[in-house]
Length: 221
Length: 221
DNA sequence: ATAATTATTTAGGCTCACCTAAATTCCGTC
DNA sequence: GACGGAATTTAGGTGAGCCTAAATAATTAT
Image (cartoon, rainbow over all chains, first blue to last red; front, side, top):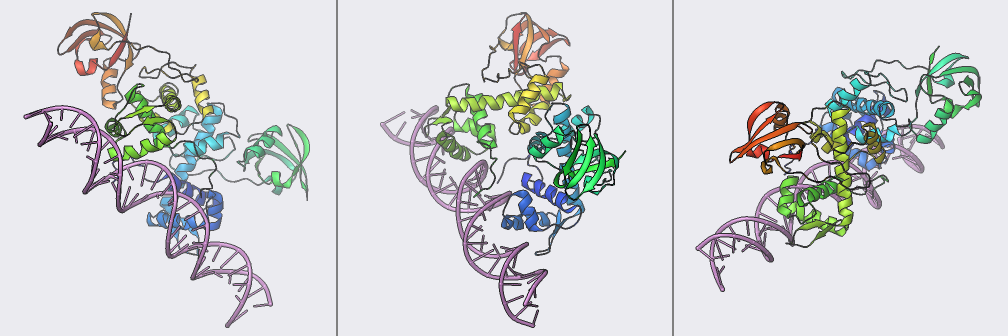
């Protein structure tokens, strides 16, 4: 028997799985293999966890058929995502962390902050709508208001603004930082070529390779 | 085999044991029973952990003889205490947590913040020397500069200032708050009686019961 | 000094989240 | 419609950190 009365309802691993299912599936179904890769775990380990989550009613899981979040599971996932993104915003804006370091720190802290901590930092930051990468922060009611913009690889020539950088790798983020391609910055799309996108921005003109351009979500004007 | 490369050197439980041994022992020896009570765990569970910590060289442990921290164990304990107290100061001063809530939150977070986080909040707060309860914060070099003052139960009549409140229970802390007996506040000791200490402070005159007075560490003037 | 009491350790289990190796089931191709 | 390769699940283990119950050592009281 365990004497500890203050046990969280879900383990850290369980929360991480739910978040991963959410982020990989976007509401749809996710395969165990994809989940195993994201979690850096063997596929066999995924099976066991999915059974547990299904038993808790957080996930719909039929063997060989993939997983999908239930409404309850979705709520948990959004709560974790809210913690994570608020923490990222907080670490960057209030504590001066560089934007490539916030992800790792937030990943560790997201499971350990209270609702009060969440509220306090949200308030301190003026209830931000996006984190430093431009990812939208779920509201306290766990809705995600923001529509997605196109990727830089899908845009016609014209004037845009970087909305979101879909990368968490520190090295990649440093590159975008140096190119002044961070959320809010202007980008001019000059031409799309098979190799990438020719752009003009605050850091001058360059041919942005497709692998990088693909990762930038933009908004008109 | 575990694929996770980013495993902390010590588990949360191990850090908690080291901190508890430090705080219970004050450099001296601690009994397994005392440790079991502090950790809210069965004495049998303590034995196993002490063997592990001894194997890691963090603790000197001879069966039936109690435990004592080694220099390496002391360093770990002080690092954890530094995290804890810095977090308490941060939660109270920067995030506006009430002083009776900071302990619980800090207890959860202390194991999960990076050295960078530690530095940033220390800097943000102007490198505070004490937490909201007046407990001294170990320096980054892990020394604890501050001398202890007398308890209110041990003082001659005269003028003092509250230095430290040796309590973590939220209810007790609320009482001291209401009596304006928090670190930095002035207290006048009028008389010591068997029942307690008659004092005058910002909240007026009263007979402070011995159990409460005992918990207040004060400083002259 | 011996007996009673208390503190501590040993022995044996449990759960969690992971692992490997060995089935299975699925799916696209022939 | 059968077959082969890939994905997935089953079966059986591991280590951490806790548990209970039973044995043993230390301390206190008579």
